[in-house]
Length: 417
Image 1 (tube, helix red, strand yellow):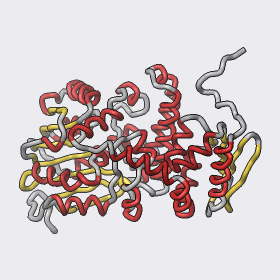
Image 2 (cartoon, helix red, strand yellow; image 1 turned 30 degrees about the horizontal axis):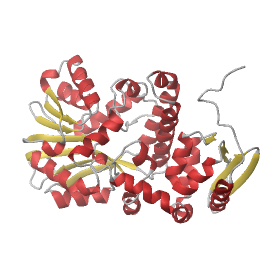
Image 3 (cartoon, rainbow, N blue to C red; image 1 turned 90 degrees about the vertical axis):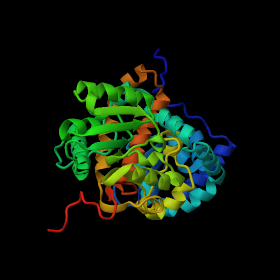
Image 4 (cartoon, one colour; image 1 turned 120 degrees about the vertical axis):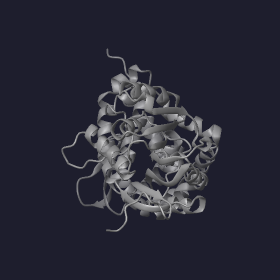
């Protein structure tokens, strides 16, 4: 007889009184779906919700604890229930897109239903503040998991940010190279310049800048795993003499640089620290300096409610993170610096494809992930993470902006012909 494994669904049992009450509340909530179709399957029974059109998305309840998780903790509970194996879906990303599309109808009722769970999650989030000590701990919790694990789903450059698919037939590696090239072109680099990078990643942007543009780079990170890998990457590319990778918080950086680069690091700064971030950038830039930044964003109308809460990503994937809105970014730059906006473009729709490809690679490599010592709950959590984010970018509930900041009178910028 075959023994059960961690991949097997949990046995279905009859719900207790609390789970029955939660079930009634959640099913009542689903009756307010304003678009799409959802089928919830439990012990062979099918409950259908939503006006359509199109095929229904299926959610199969595999453990009645699903109901209490969702009722008590809302969207955080939905992710935690998936991680625990309490439910499955034939198309997880489609399920999350359906729920996102119906957020205006569901959110007010969700908020009332899950008030206590939301409050507890918010307190936990506030305890992960991005002060000098907390920032390093928050970064380590994600980026120091395992270089080998990240290598299973990233391209060879180990670029962990939105790719730029300039053509439909581009590979992930080509899309990531195009994104890095765009950032460096916008920086208007020339040989001999000095560049400060805030957030090294695994070193690919710094290596491209030093190798292809002839600049000298100082790159800062708070991840010990990334630091070691970035140094090795620079050595392999023959540019170790042009790049200095350091384990240092941007708030402790000193000096003057021609350019500052930062790709998807600002989400780890925190709402209250954003003016200080731009003040630091302003102080580090030379007189005719430019800052080129790539930042994940949330729509302005959602930002205030979002930053006062705690979502599943903040609790389980990126502790301490706060995704800013474009308005908040510009307000913070105005409050903390003399920097002003030169150009901005949203590349967020490219992130949906990037995340879909990461998820496909990750799930294909799931046996290797487990072999590295990560459990089934980790595999399911990251499956959910990729789908959750893909849904957000696909429906433009999230954006990803590349933007350039300078000061008035900057002589490095072209004039009007």
